Amino acid sequence: MAVDYAALKAGGFMRQKQKNTFSMRLRVVGGTVTAEQMSVIQRVADKYGKGYIHLTSRQGIEIPFIKLEDIEEVKAELAKGNVLPGVCGPRVRTVTACQGGRCCPSGCIDALDIAEKLDARYFGRQLPHKFKFGVTGCQNNCLKAEENDFGVKGGMLISWNRDDCIFCGVCEQACRSGAIKISDGEITVEQENCNHCGRCVTACPTGSWQGKSGYIISVGGTFGNAIKRGRELLPIVEDEETLMKLADAAIDFFDENANPGERFAKTLERVGWDQLENKFKEIYNG
Amino acid sequence: MADYNITDTVDITDVVCPVTFVKAKVALEELDNGDILSIHMNGGEPVQNVPRSIKDEGHKILKLITNDDGTFDLIVQKAGD
Ligand code: SF4
Ligand code: SF4
Ligand code: SF4
Image (cartoon, rainbow over all chains, first blue to last red; front, side, top):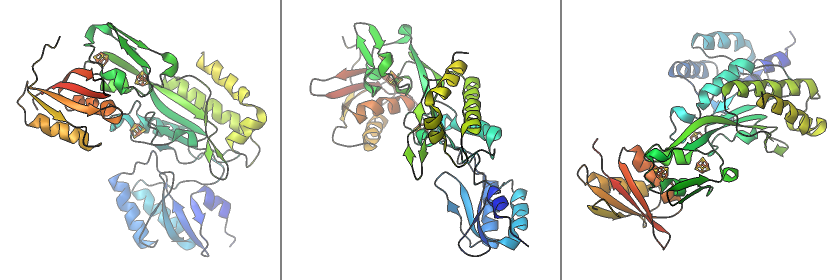
């Protein structure tokens, strides 16, 4: 029987150097694995692998040393604990995320929720080459948004309400960009220096700073053989619907324009960043 | 201009993050509700982060005083649990 390695790879089975042996990649969204999933993963690693798992660089889990003849059994076993196989090859990969606003005091957005929505929308979609999404909750960038083909970073659109302000001076110091100036009963923000980190909002003791969540989007990042930092083509995006429309536009652009085996950054360089930028602006301006 | 009376002061310029916040928190714990603590801290990380942490603990920040030598005094009123 000929082994269809491409199909196995597409289904998350990574061929190992040892003959007829695979490292099985699992589907993980935003680095979150439930206790129920962990217990079935543990059982499978013990019974079919070598009693350990590997944590990948992008929040994935692999179970190494799965034998070719056990593959169907392993899949069935994992499915019982709601664990699905991951993917490899030219398609949308694991969507990564930090814990974001659900747990982290600095979080400007619910990063995990966005990651889940992106995963539901695109995971495994076949494309000319791999395509990575990453979602980070704020400017601290723990999840490193710009490493991804499509990166999302949480930010805040801020506004100040004089009525509650006690002019304590905390926000002026909390702002690392030096964008806030307090003088004689007036607070001003130098908009061009504001990076939407939201630190003024979280630091203010009286709630005088109000923040509305937004999304800072970068495209064309890659950190493998070639290293490129994803670029921001738009100002901060204010709503989730626009974010998803932009994600659609980016992925369709890649699908339509990329040569096989070409990463998004290369496509954008070849076809022209302005092509995507124009599409983005149309969506952004409604 | 001060409309508060400082009960106690604590100097956290001799420690680094995250001990800065811990030291301030311990000083607050020794006070009674409503007492006022002045926390002496350095610029940079401490003044960027300690006020927020104190606020997150539920205490009331009254004022951040900027000193000429680049240090700050954060005036905090202790709140109950
Ligand atoms: S990126 Fe921001 S929200 Fe996410 S874990 Fe880091 S500090 Fe928290
Ligand atoms: S931190 Fe809040 S209360 Fe204090 S000066 Fe800034 S806006 Fe006013
Ligand atoms: S959002 Fe961040 S950069 Fe902008 S004014 Fe507030 S603290 Fe400064």
